[in-house]
Length: 58
Image (tube, rainbow, N blue to C red; front, side):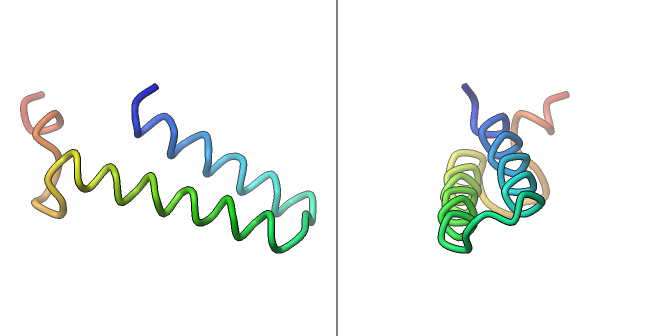
């Protein structure tokens, strides 16, 4: 599963957890995981250079 898909799934999970009024600890852990995925995305695709190499080639 690619990193963009993981970010999308985790964001949906976070939104659902918030809507269900889950414990703050669970929401915080999901949020931390999203942060990890975003950092991994920036490391893989070159940071804040205005888009990834993959997107530039399209």
